[in-house]
Length: 136
Image 1 (cartoon, rainbow, N blue to C red):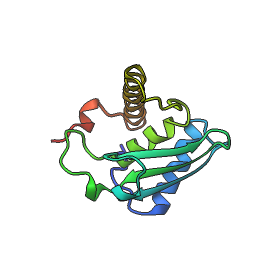
Image 2 (tube, rainbow, N blue to C red; image 1 turned 180 degrees about the vertical axis):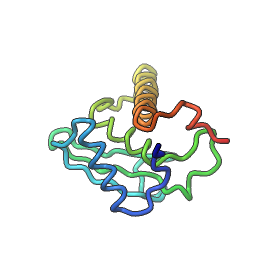
Image 3 (cartoon, helix red, strand yellow; image 1 turned 135 degrees about the horizontal axis):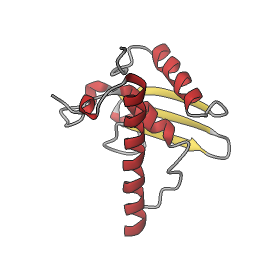
Image 4 (tube, rainbow, N blue to C red; image 1 turned 120 degrees about the horizontal axis):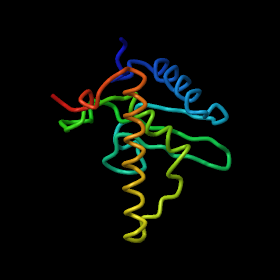
């Protein structure tokens, strides 16, 4: 059985994976570009991925952290899972409202659900258990 793409080795591989997931997630009507980036290329800080989207035009720029900046973490680096998580933002979690305690709470809870969905989709595609994502 194939394994998830842990590190994109080329822009072509990333684009091919993006196209595959766009179709599976019913996002073929979106214009989406994705790149592997350094931390300074992100709008936010301390992120593994970022989706800068425009809902009106159904377009977005996805940034995926270059694995050399990932560091030692509890969860493994899985570029394909990061891509799926960021694509799910085109479907959910459109409104960032961190100006109140309640808004921040909803933001954290929704991000947690997106992360679970992304992992679930990777697990289903590759017939994996959750243990796959835990660093050894």
